[in-house]
Image (spheres, one colour):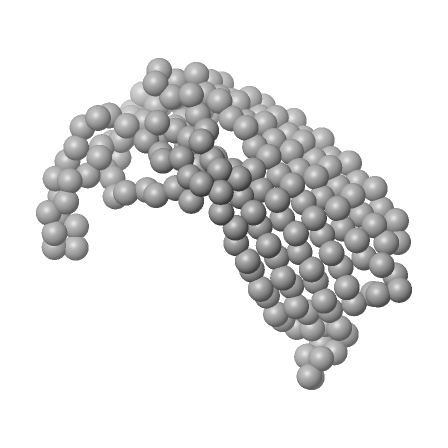
Amino acid sequence: GPEYPLSRRKANPELKPEASLQADLGLAYRTSSLTIHAQAFSRQMKSCIYLKPTGATASESVLGNDTVLSVYTYDQAKAQVNGGELMLSVHPPAIRWLEWSLGYAKTANSISGDDEKNLALQPADKLVTSVRIQAETFSGMKNAFALFTWSSFTPQSSVASFEKPFDAYSLLDVSFGG
């Protein structure tokens, strides 16, 4: 993911409260062995508060070392964030202890700031698949489970001016419990 160096942030007393309007739509279809979810959202912000580089630097002692920090301030502009997610879960009745899921999520944003075209910290598109194995009891644990999740993130080039684009990457998450 992106790297965020140490920085100094200046307050902006001219900021007004953010105002936004958001619409969400979700649909689901379920059978005894299949679940499909689809969700979409759109958020319009009249006065989105965002971080903006000033181009200035400040020298400070960080952990006993003199460090040059970039200085940022906060600004406001109109912004829009849209996104959606599609999820498929297969849970066969004949194999009640197994569930497989596959999902895709996408988010897009824009801002009408002076120098900015993208909001900071926006997620990359991702494809997620997981397998869940569960048992009523296992080695004395009730409701025992093992969950294996693989998340693949696409490259992210729609970043704020002070962020670095990043390459595609994947994460594996393994969870056990009961």
